[in-house]
Image (cartoon, rainbow, N blue to C red; front, top):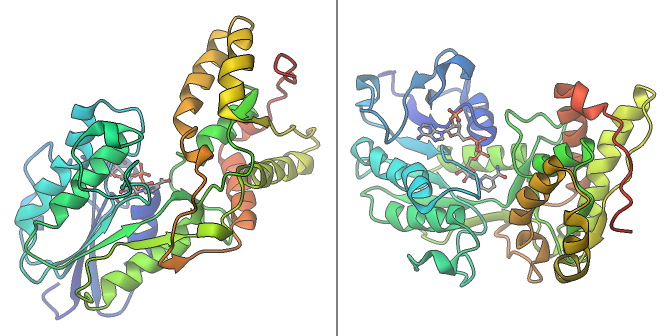
Length: 343
Ligand SMILES: NC(=O)c1ccc[n+]([C@@H]2O[C@H](COP(=O)([O-])OP(=O)(O)OC[C@H]3O[C@@H](n4cnc5c(N)ncnc54)[C@H](OP(=O)(O)O)[C@@H]3O)[C@@H](O)[C@H]2O)c1
């Protein structure tokens, strides 16, 4: 560095988003990128190991940064409040010494950081769907107190990239895909016409790189990357996912899997689930508990309001499912018995 190049620090470089951002920035003329990672073993070889908030920052990072793209976070929806705060708020606080008055912080949040009220001002977990949202709202409040300019970018559910479905890590939608492949998802509790907003990781990577490389515009409104009222319905998204998996299976002579029925949460909990529970295996019961965290997101009636619109995501969901299958061939090839209980 020291050659007049723009210095950019990317946190979370082993993650779905951080990997894509660091990959895009490397080799860009006029940019000197430094990636950090908690797990050096799986990170790019040049990544600086650092458990943010959990250990002192490495001396190598003590320098001036033009831009920090902060993607490191714990995206689980099932954390305790303490875990969520440590993972997603204390980590922002730990970046503070790296930020000068002219460091542009590009902070990755979530489209749902506003929780049930639709804004991030509340510190009451009851105002959010889960501790993850609550902690991401806390992080958004904290970044506003930092000295430099800040751009908050809010994506909804993220899947692999458009061209080939590549994803450095599988969370979110992939939990459902894994469950369907294993035959552990009898029913999806969702409003059939609810929209599920999904963005390809490369669309987000492009946006983050573009934001990082241009001067901050001084605005404080979050950038929402989403499909909004053009997002696919839950049913269409699940079908696209199954299409991708089934196309992969067909190439290998493995029979198709049938998409789980979409049942409105109220009917599922009142009529089907009490009956189904006792007939399910422990693994299937666990999967049902796991999927419960998706219900609020699969019952949203009001679409997100994008500031940057994403369209045509169904093909990307197909490609993402096929990419996942390529990386998990044993699971993707299973022949689970069809479900009968909830018919
Ligand atoms: N995935 C989604 O669908 C989604 C949707 C909306 C918003 N977001 C937001 O997008 C951002 C990126 O998420 P993602 O999907 O890329 O998550 P991810 O795949 O789970 O990656 C998270 C990254 O953060 C690192 N990390 C976590 N805690 C850390 C710590 N204390 N110190 C250092 N590194 C730490 C992880 O390191 P390890 O490799 O060691 O785990 C990993 O590199 C997050 O801010 C998330 O809230 C994600």
